[in-house]
Amino acid sequence: MFRDVTAFVQMLSAAVPDFLEGVLALVIAILLARPLSHLCMRPFSYFQSGPLLHSVIRRSFSLLIILLGLYIFLKQSGLTEFAVAIMSGTGIVGLILGFAFRDIAENFISSLLLTVQRPFKIGDVVTIASYTGVIQKVTARATTLVDFDGNHIQLPNASVYKGIIKNLTANPNMRGQLELGVGYDNDISQVRQLAQTVLGQHQFVLDSPEPLVLIDNLGASTVNLKVYFWINAEVTSIVKITSSLFRQLLATFEQAGISMPDDAREIIFPQGVPVVNSVAQNSPSGGQKNEVSSPPAKNGSLPHASDKYSTDSHHTEDVASETSEIRRQAKHARDPEDGDNIL
Image 1: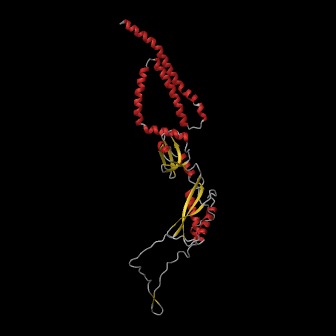
Image 2: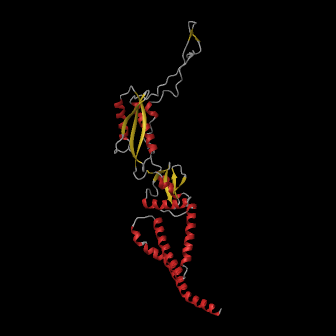
Image 3: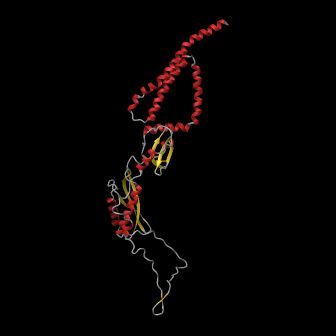
């Protein structure tokens, strides 16, 4: 019995130094993990990567250093087989957790890929999954948009990365279009020339690429024209410019006597249309005189056709883009998503 105790004490005394060396190695690895990871990150500082990618690489270096210290500790303690068993169990647990947190891992990996590829940046106007808005923030989980109604929309990064991204800011030039129908009795060449003149004189329509006035199709009672024009979407609004061009084109066409009839329709009255005479009045000769009443004039004569669409010459029409206002709102709005911005 005494020999067994003595052998155990001798074995323990021989194992203690190795155990203490393992503990020391683990403590040193934990203490040096952070500064060594920053040192290892210096070569990567020359690459234009996002803060999220830098953080992931730095933490990966820290984890490798700590795992090295843990391996030395287990080896010095004689627990290598136990470590293998733990790692095996951890692998099973990791597999289970992987299925449970698959979406979280997918969004995180997608955020890394978005950081590397950079299909957009903060403040860009994009269309993602039928949502159009300004990029406010991108975290490790979601991308936040502020649409032009002022709403915050959070999209999972996995959906953003795998979806179709339409960046409207990468090229500030945007093409707009509108349709007009003129009657067949008009000179189409004259109509196109008038429309081309209106587009060329509009101060916010770009000269290059040049605007186009094309015949789109032949309707029942009109020749349908399609007008294409380009604007700088960072400065002007496509909706406001379209409204302004409609107004100027209508005024120009009416001044030039260009007819714009409605679609032809056929109305059938099976029983005929009854004619109602006005109140009979006695004529000087004693007979009756039927008079057809006419609608009274409103405020005198009708306004000139061009006045219906014209504006005050001293008034500057507002065609400014709303993008800068939405960016300002996105900057000062409450952040609905916790976490650091990665772009």
